[in-house]
Length: 252
Image 1 (cartoon, one colour):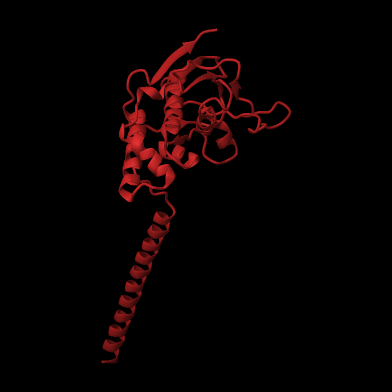
Image 2: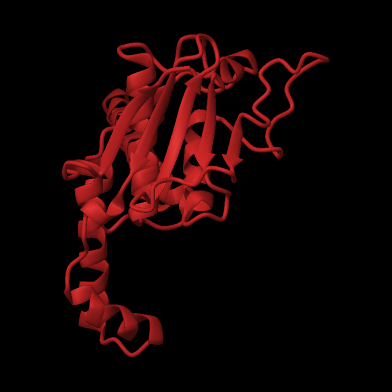
């Protein structure tokens, strides 16, 4: 009987330990998922993730150990939204213009971040050059005088002054912006002119905008305003009408 009771007690103990382990593991997974979910940005529009991502490699990142050699940065439109703090036609146009230019410059190759020189027609305060330039910098690495100075006396991996603004040459009046992207390694240049007027907003926006800005819009009107605003952004990203982006190679 004692041996039987001992076996029985041992079995109970093993069962208890097994159940406890399962509970701890389950709890750990649940907590981990909870923390992970709480740490992510929740967007109200699913098309942010439907826009084609932009892949670039950055030799500086691998040299400094941020990623293995050959790995790439993957930028999404959601990254641009997070960087800008909002989603609008300027942010969408900046993202799409950069994507188009990199495809034209590199074809099937993975673009190299830091190997691209960027020039805007017009000053930084021309229309929305300033906000657009920030998204371009995020993706290409090209920066103004505040950028990375590089390593050593030769400034290896320098990003500073790879972005400039040509105040003496403003773009066509119809253009929201005009940007020239140039590969530093081979000199190839691509100009992208972005014309947001080809993607008109809803006529309802004329009524809703002043209500929203003045704080007099109802909850339904505010929601409608946001939805109409993002529908325009969605069109720019996923189905831009002909003429929205005009691309040409610049020959010296």
